Image (cartoon, rainbow, N blue to C red; front, side, top):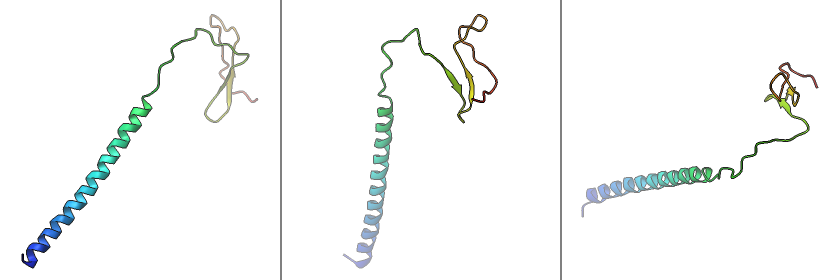
Length: 89
């Protein structure tokens, strides 16, 4: 075999090996994503739905932690009323 033919074969082999590595990485990534999606979906719905929630007090807060209301008072026809202004404490 001539030197040019051997060099051509080595270049082709190099390119083939790079493609193979890239495909292996892509395959692993796809499998990881499929496994993550499958594991996220393994949540059973509740078997029993309760009609009543009991507590001594409910506090309504925003994302910053500010109190916006508290509840369990009769307000007109609704058994649950919440103050709509920001509370200081």
